[in-house]
Image (tube, one colour):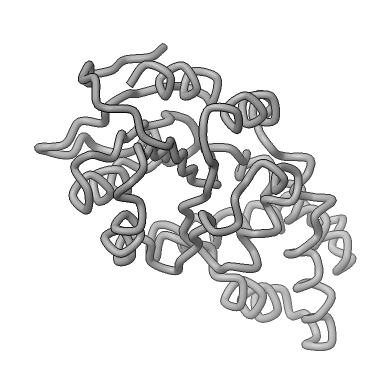
Length: 232
């Protein structure tokens, strides 16, 4: 399903495609299951794995709803306290948060082929919210397709939108995200940015419509996003 409300033909410029990470190119829900199960095994709580994983999901959801990001330090501290884990295990838990062998498993299936094709249309970058090291661990599988100067990871990316898009006045910019509020902020920062709402993941379908904002295209996966980018 692709819907678009933009049919304008603008002069050709260099193309820049900025991608959110979580739920856009990366299956955050499946990754969490892997991460939480491995931490559970590390702590020797296998007999309580279901309760442990559920508690971790609830904690992660609470953090994301509250601050828009997964707070790694708060997560580890809460796990230590809630499950009466010795602080000696802190480093072991932290190590699991940055294992690329976990993140490589959970790039959405179509993404690698799509990025390969998109890299021939323009330059690819990231516009993500979260802790820099934690988010960059999710990029290892497809880092070769990204231009390092176009990787933007911020604790509060909405506050950085204006300064980011000011850098790209000589580009036709396409921005793909699962969060309408982020796409609206991008459009407010630069009305020329083509906004593409990828409607997947646990948060995309729970969002209310934003009064006064309609994304330039709505898609269900990155294959549809590729077609939208070609046609906007």
